[in-house]
Amino acid sequence: MSDKAKCIIALGAFVIFTFIGYKLLPKDEVVIQVDEDKADNKIYVHIEGCVHSPGIKEVTYGTRLYELIEIAGGETMDADLSKVNLATILSDEQKVYIPEKIVFEEIKTNTSTLNVSSAKHNTQNMLININVATIDELKTLSGVGDAMAKRIIDFRENEGYFNSIEDIMDVEGIGEAKFNKIKDNITT
Image (tube, rainbow, N blue to C red; front, top):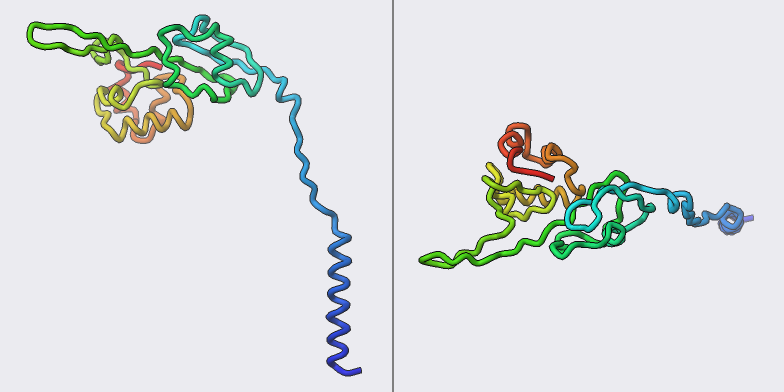
């Protein structure tokens, strides 16, 4: 038998054995398992702010924020739901704050008309809620500029609400010294 014939027979045997081996290999199956136990799990979420019945609520795993607001008696007329993500899936031990609308009133003076916020975003009289404050409100804090205010907002959008004022030190650039300058002017 010639070398050419041997190569053809060897190649043919290789193809046949490869095909048979492929057919005999176990196939991976995609199995989607639903953890039914988790769907029945209860979680506890603390809701505060502009809802009729604030407090700790027991809900099932997978509950969304809009459902929690309904469980808490619904939002009050002062609630500003545009500041929260109603589609957020809640997690155990989470604290949720429903902010109040900021209403501007006109005050007439002898020389001009001033717009004054009823929320009085004045750091001398009012605390800044770091869970709902805007960039401009955060910039009223000592040592907080545009970049730092944006980092605070980005942090709370990515990591969730601050549970305590001390949690703001988790934001890059806010150490103990900066925290000590602003701690008397902030709340959660």
